[in-house]
Image 1 (tube, rainbow, N blue to C red):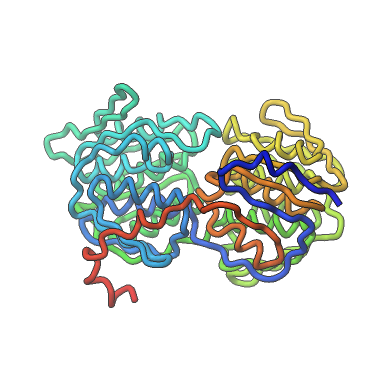
Image 2 (tube, rainbow, N blue to C red):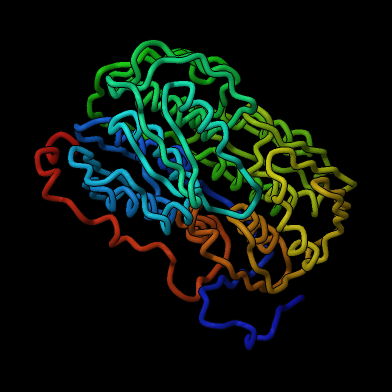
Amino acid sequence: MHSVVNANIINSEPYLEVDGISYLSGNIKISGAKNSVLVLMAASLLTEEKLVINNVPELTDIAVMSNLLQEIGVSLYREANKLYLSSNSIKITELPYNLVHALRASFVCIGPLLARKGEVKIPMPGGCRIGARPIEEHIKGLKAMGAEVIIKDGVVCAQIISQRKRLQGAHIKLNCQSVGATETLIMAATLAEGETIIENAAQEPEIQDLANLLISMGAQIFGAGSSKIKIIGKQKLNGSIYSAIPDRIEAGTFLIAAAITRSELSLSPVIPAHLGAIIEKLEECGCSIDIKENAIKITPGKELKSVDISTSPFPGFPTDLQAPFMALMATAKGTSTIIENVFENRMQHVSELKRMGSSIHLSGNTALIEGVKELIPSCLSAGDLRSSAAIVLASISTKGRSIIKGLHHLDRGYENFEEKLNKVGCNIVRKGSKIYQSETMQKGLEDFTDLNQEVA
């Protein structure tokens, strides 16, 4: 049996001990979609009334967004998987550098803050170092709606210059299908005067989820989920109680976990239409997929074959599943090609998978993977959120114990990741505390006492 690594290399940083050769069996509960919830939280800035979001995962990214909103005066309280928000007393419209820099998704706050308050200052965003992910599309769209936008000393300063202090409806054609820009402009347009058309809009399920929340708040939005979205602006929006969609990336990751361990596994709740691209590739490589309403069961064949993937915006193969799928292909029979088309620096997992004995030849954003009989355990370090999941999946397929560091990446986007895997047969032990800090979201209960009966 393979074994791993000298314990002397482990310092005080939290890490996982992963014992491989796990055969999985059972059902995994899928959490709410992180990428959706973050933007639903930003939407609370559009109304003075209270917003309740259900199905909120416990993640560091959610905590960072919570801290950011609290910094500008939003009252916020968390109870289990419910998040209560009230933006009726926003104190400032300048977002703090340290929090925006830690969470790129927070940049979408520029749209609702500008639309409601008439001005906003927000630092250039940070987040995972997986590519440039420019903000030009956000700025171009806001300018088309009548905003004056300048960038000075790394801070984006936007204000409405019309005397009426409202954004104006506009016809906007995005140069690329940017999810963030589409979300920013939809939110801004809900409070604009007149009609806004967004062409070449992103079609991701998270866009549809945002639109559904906004519609429940009184917005008029048509065509979300297609490449052309129409928004008719309103004077104001109402509060709402809303449940976020299940996380399609988490579901896809656990489907790949079943495949890489050649195990039968069930997942729920899911929205199968959100998983079309990953289901297609798993079936192509030799997995049987059974779908019943909001549940999915995967039964891999004993020997999986290599298949090619090329990432693209929804409904194409998601970039967020590229790293986990590469780990699977490292164990499949034959040679596969994986092309990353969305982000230019999203191959950070390749070096870690090669450390485990995989045969991967990388040229730019194209990887040629020759499947090997088995991967070997190693001491590994995650470079970004999705690569962290990929090396955990690779580790559970080995014969022996691996050590995985860089858990601050994993805790950003997967709720109770190792606990969920352990419940279906893995043996993963976390050494050290989770990065997530729940105390950041337990303030402001007194502002929501009137909702207790309504949301019970």
